[in-house]
Image 1 (spheres, helix red, strand yellow):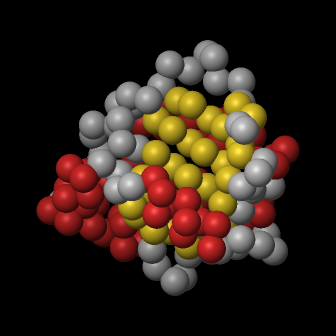
Image 2 (cartoon, rainbow, N blue to C red):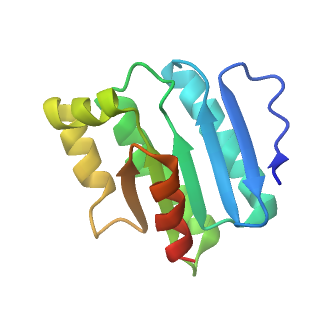
Length: 144
């Protein structure tokens, strides 16, 4: 069962909340600009005001472009804001990547830096990357 946000105005994003799992889902449906990325994640924050989900599944498999600046914005601005909204709980984020994007994270120095920042113990959230949704959900549910 999924409760979807009002994302009809977005052709680039599908937001949802699974009350049975207490998981907020953010699925990017196509490549996005930095402005669209910010709009989409702000919509996710607004949806989470109603659910207070500390478990987020972010699916970027359909985004063909990943770049360090937007990844750093997510790691250093968006996710800390999301973590503050669920405090004193801890936000756990499973990032779902295509195998090609997972390889790109290892090859691109800027993306490696942004990923290392996002996975730093100093962050107010915990983040892990996955290429399969099953293990991503298992990881999230083991944190609840």
